[in-house]
Image (cartoon, rainbow, N blue to C red; front, top):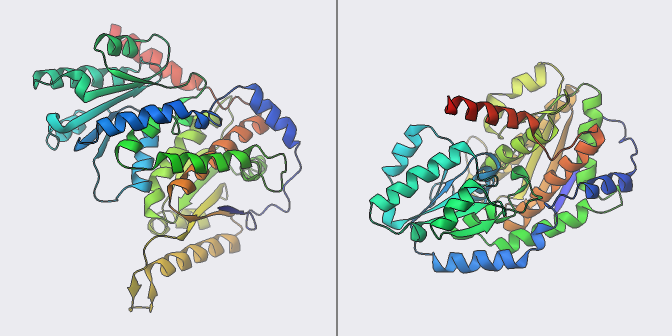
Length: 394
């Protein structure tokens, strides 16, 4: 269950909006992020593939942006903090590749190459490099590589079909930053032991809330309306600050979601990720005493999943200390007139994470309509890609 506490938002009241009209506008955009979670054949295909490929010691995801951040978030949130089998190459820094090769055994590694367009330069470069290395080491490419890409002909898909690789489709109407609950995120999640059925179950609960016509219970709408109303009053930055180590990569995932969706037409909200309690000691000074232009969105967990007692300097538990520090941080911001809100979830679980994905994706969709922009394109990114390709062809 998710709760949203807007008490310290500094808004006297949330101004009314026609929620049904906003939902109609979102439906009219025909985006699939909230109904591809019903795609049972994809889940079955993922489960079958994972069962056949359960013996790999390492899984390497080659992808960038939305093709990587979801997998990183799922591993950090639902896997072990210090022991994992998933590596995500979300950059082309050669040191990353060199040091990855120092710790993997090609015979025991599966590569997942992910790009919806099939033409992402960085990912195609990784595909070319690792496909050659797999073959040079004497292994069948189809035994050690799988592709996740768009359903239409594209450079990666065409190459994968020639090599007889297993291919998972990214739905055409789901953008990369909204794709965590498609094969983009679900395939690596399943391969590292995450219960994707529970993840999708939670997402469906979140979807029902997102589609509710009742503004009193529609949490994505309430969140978006708070962000929008504060933005109209000069709050141009949002800080997502989870008080749970496991959710710091969720904040990274959200940062792309908000930045690429809302930063358009000279409008936007700048996303900042922070971690409680860590960033009380690196960012809180700015938030309390700097420009009053930020909304702090706390993300707290009622049951962290571990209770460890401490006797000194105060007799308590680490979990209680974490919660006390969060409350004190929120109180300090409130006393200084700094807007802050709190999102509470019961635990860091598959179902809770599924709900959180839909909460923030839904809020982003609402925010786009409230700001009068299309939250589902990214023209500013396309120009950079075009210029990169032109430079490479010179």
